[in-house]
Length: 432
Image 1 (cartoon, rainbow, N blue to C red):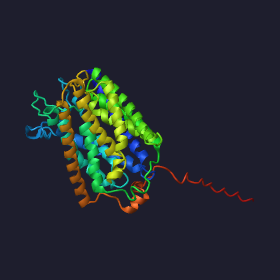
Image 2 (image 1 turned 180 degrees about the vertical axis):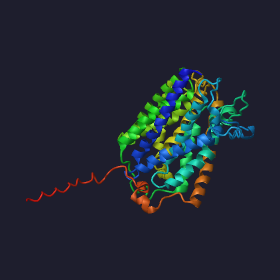
Image 3 (image 1 turned 90 degrees about the vertical axis):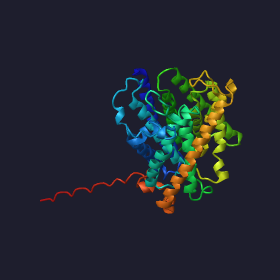
Image 4 (image 1 turned 90 degrees about the horizontal axis):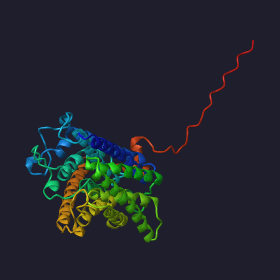
C-alpha cells in the first residue's frame, strides 16, 4: 500500500461527501421558500438509498466481471457485496475498500443530480423508490462500461467503453453528467410541467444559499476529479489545476453572455457557470493542458448559458436546469477531448488539434451517444411504469401549498418566535 496515495484518496472521499450538502444547498436556494426542505430531502435521500444499494450489490455489479464476459454489464455472482474487501490486498496501491467507498459517492451524487429536474412536484416516497431502480438498471451498467477496466491477472472483463473503444472519461462526463442530465429530461417528459409554468414565476428564494452550495461543490470537485487519479502525484496535481481553471473561466463566460444579451451579470449566473465548467472539465481534466481547460470552461459557460433557455422554446420543464448544465456541459467536455487532448497530459492521447487525427473524437462520440441513448430510453420506461402504477406527482393542492408540507416542516419560521407568556403572580398570603 502507498500511504501517501491512500491519504489523498481518503481526503478526496471526504471532499466528495461534502458535495452532498453542497448540492442540496445549490438546489435548495433555487427553489421556493416552501420547497427547500423537500429539495434537501431528495438530495440526501437519493445518496442514502444508493449507498445502501452499493454495499449490497452495486459495487460488484459495476466493477465485477462482465455478464457473459461480453463487457456489457458488470455482474460477479461469485462475490456479491463488499464482504470481499475487508481483507488487505497487498497488490493494490490503495485499499480496495477505499476505492469502493470513493465510487459509492459517485453513484449517489449522480442519482441525486436528477432531483433538480423534477423539483417541486414529485412524490418523495416514489422518488426514493425511483432512485433505487434507476441506480440499479441505469447507473450501474453505465458505470461498468466507463469505469471498469479489465484485469487480465484476475480474469475480470471490464466495460466496453473503457476497454474496447477506449474513450477518455477521467471522472464521469458520460457516466455521471450525460447520464444524469438525459435521465432528468426523460423523467420530466413523463412527470409534466409545474402548475402555471412557464407563466407563473418560480423564482429562487435564497441566492446566497445557492452561491454557498456552488462554492462547496467547487471545493468538493477537487476530490471528485483529483481523487480519480487514485494516487498522490503529478496526475492529481494537473487535474486539480485544470478543474479550478475551467470552473473560473466558465463562471466568467456565463456572466459575459448575460451582459451581452442585455441583462445584468447575476450571482445565479456566476454560480451556474462555475458548475457548468466543473461539469465540462470532469471527463477532460486528465486529457488537456491548463490552456485547454480554460477553453473548455469558456465554451461550456457560454453554451450552457444559452442552453438553459431551450426549455422555454421546446416546452419541457426542467426545474433547475439539469439538462442545460449537466447534459450540455457533459457533452461539451466529452466531445472537446477529441479536439483538445494532448499526449503531454496524464491520459497520454492527442486529439485533432495536437496531431492525433479523428480517431479519438470518434471514440468520444460513440461513448456519448451510447450513454445518452441507453439512459434516456431506460429512464423513460422506469418513470412511465412508476407513473402508471403509483403516480409520480403530488396532488395539485400540495404543489400549490408548497411541497415542504409533505414533510410537515418548513425551512423558515415565517410566524416569528412564540409569544412569551408570563407566569401568573402568586397570590399574597392571607393576613392573620
